[in-house]
Image 1 (tube, helix red, strand yellow):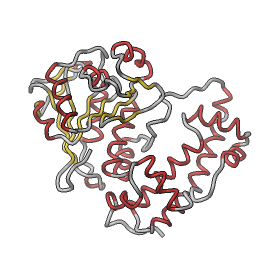
Image 2 (cartoon, one colour; image 1 turned 60 degrees about the horizontal axis):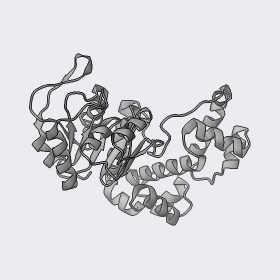
Image 3 (cartoon, one colour; image 1 turned 180 degrees about the vertical axis):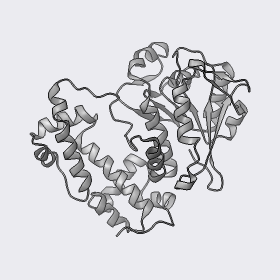
Image 4 (cartoon, helix red, strand yellow; image 1 turned 90 degrees about the horizontal axis):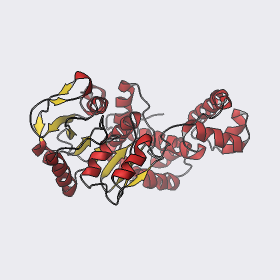
Length: 330
């Protein structure tokens, strides 16, 4: 998603009978609230449908469109909510409009069962996609040409984003803000929503707690994570964090993944990238110093991780998102 700096980002929420009210609310909360007084860029969110008639949602709710499908040609990002009934057929004009938008190169994002809508349009054929873990087999059966992934919160392929259920839709929306407008804008929105500002798309959809012991270990694992966060500039190993939690390295790694859905080192890299993003946005610190404070040790290592996880370099990231009015951190 890209938007010229002289106008708000144009976001289209595609509505038709059967879309989930929860997903509509998520999209509206992320892009439909004016937070410019807190440094968040302005967005222009439009509710787009085939005609101007109110769209009926479950629970006696309705959504009144303010634009027709023709407006999709102006959008920087098109978001498709999930469905109450995942086999709900989308109207033909909606499917045609989504196909045309993808051909134009407009990014498409589907929340939860919205993947079924994109699949109906044929846009997921031959591509990877994710949906709620409880719907993966249904999506495979109904759309066998889609490569359905199970263990991911959200993923991206060929300018199309799909996400898992409920909270993962929030994660994807915040990720799209983060990659376009910077980590600070996404964090500000997350704070106002009282939700986690950053979960990686590769994190597991749900966490198993197979024994009561896993719950008893939660405090020790949380303390180890808190220590790592408070000392990001220092080197950390699984063995060192395990010792702080009072566990063997093997037990620590196994229970860490059972609790968080990711490995200790992947989690640590994610936290370091987020810390580096904030320093690049908020400060004028030299890039090597940002790398040191974030715990990467060297600019080369940080650059490699930025390329892998953000598809950009630290210097280009700063050029795109640096707050020129920010103060240098001492």
